[in-house]
Image 1 (cartoon, helix red, strand yellow):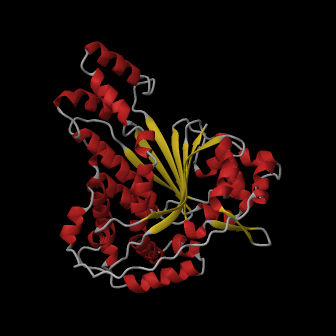
Image 2 (image 1 turned 90 degrees about the vertical axis):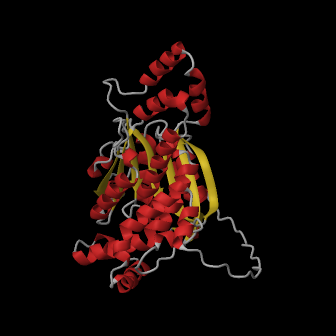
Image 3 (image 1 turned 120 degrees about the vertical axis):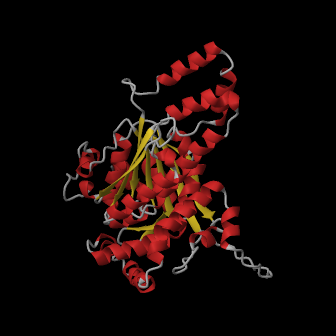
Length: 415
């Protein structure tokens, strides 16, 4: 704890002057039709946008969408987050429906790209590294080689023969963007792997499909997002049947989403824990929300567009929370933190001094050598795919703009 606290004293803000370039005027291009733009999207993106449109078009077509959106914007501007997201009433549910219709689509597209770039499908066992796939194809030609390979693969399965399980914890994921992004990554990876084969590869592909782990996602948030997460889960299974295990040959491929309402920092509040450093490693603290960060099945933790809010909510509780992740999580688990680059300077203390978020996280998590930095981006642009906005806004309803994002990314792997 002492070392983590010193993190904030060691950091200095790096000043950078943004470069501005004059834009060269260009002639406006003819506006493409929805059908043509949707057809131009990559298949995985097309599926994700189609799902988003089906889920949220009923909300966009409401006559009260625009005034409700203005009300929600007012709540967010005044930082009344709990009122906006945790009001348990029909009116509160309308606020959340408008919010996901406006902001979830663009973020889901961004998170899908980030998760794909980070190799999450491979980390969760839903896709293979290229060299492993090539090695498998070459070994299938000999019976002895196939038997040896099958025996080795059996070792990764549970001892009792049940399907292997992987767990994912997503902090601040109530609006569902990262859940939808992950579903797209896994669904498209499995579909592509099953289709990209020739006759000689049938056996190898079948074996891969049979050993895909069952993925359980726990989306944690303080808001009352349960009903919307359930709708998204159903839509995910319909868009990618492989995630529901609904394959003709009975191959495994489950993807379950569980919503957990609660404050992840509450168990680590100074009011509930002793002031000594052992408090932040209490083995029972996280179980208050039914979250077990020490589970051997835990493979991925995400904190997307949430870490700055946690730090502003309580620096001490956030440090204890991160320390608990460090002391409890199993070796090999990945921790993905994504934040808006516009919030990349974190004010701390009475003086309001600011610290670069990425450097703060690196010091807090890697200072004692428990984590490795796998991916580090201080300011990465993710632009909306051409045609995605048109495809999302197909049909009637209030038009929603899908905005580009500039983000800070950190992917860590526990040693």
